[in-house]
Length: 138
Length: 138
Length: 138
Image (tube, rainbow over all chains, first blue to last red; front, side):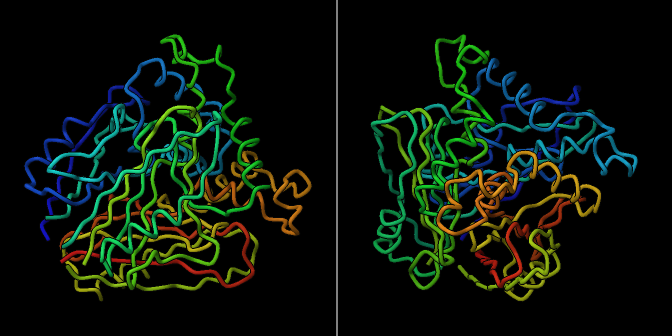
């Protein structure tokens, strides 16, 4: 079994952002030399997500509006924010969008449907945060 | 390390549906000859889900009612639908239910608790859509 | 490829609970002797979750309040409860929080960001329920 591990750092200029990281992940898979296996991609921070959905800017705005409705920023509403933080909503939003994706590697590439793209979802940005990529297989 | 990759096509007659795919996945695991490893099952379309829960028809209706409350169909409410689609809600519902499951393979079978069953969750059906199954291990 | 499979039983004294299981999982990874690979941790029951987030008690209370708002206990509101159960809400809450996590194993340890901790999330406790841990790699 072969494996390859990489870390990618993001520092988004805005508090919230969705970044298409598919090309970066595809490059790591290609460089790994692994033909058959799986690729794990996860946020290493608990106020961020990695998820797979559509690369369509209207949908991304819909996601932001929807997440704000499900888990509003509203800093005074959360007990977590009594620790001096104001990011409790980011911890909740990340649960809806998920921490990680596991993608099949087939014939040396990410084995994707027609519209699948991998996104880094930032809910408390403006500081460096990391994503882990681990490819295992043969 | 051995691996096996299969694709299953669904074409549900209704817009929304939950289909128990456990027997199909169990068969692929058995045919793979893999005794110890993991099995990845993911929707290849971004308006569908693969998830694990109970095979109880009342609960499935509860899921549908609940998802409609969290992310209503309401086509005029979403920016994504200005692209000519009417399925923005399906992209949101799929985030709640998840894209994929990773299941342990132990002793040559899916290593499940007493009630775990794998479902394909369709939120924008009436056309062919695929699920990927990848088993890796030894 | 090596693998190790373990089952951990929980019997929480309260209906709902979040239990930090990171030390237990770290020990299983160390005992597996696997240096590079992945670790799957999943609830084997469909009214419980395994998720990764912050070990902060205020945030855990925020999670509970938030989940109760998204999917209220309200037993008479769900069709599933006509089967004699009163735990339909637990099946819904578990979808928001997730069934499983997949964690990279690097250099023989869980490859975690600064605040990542693994939790067992119980939504219908007061009886024995299991978590599966499977480590694969080399």
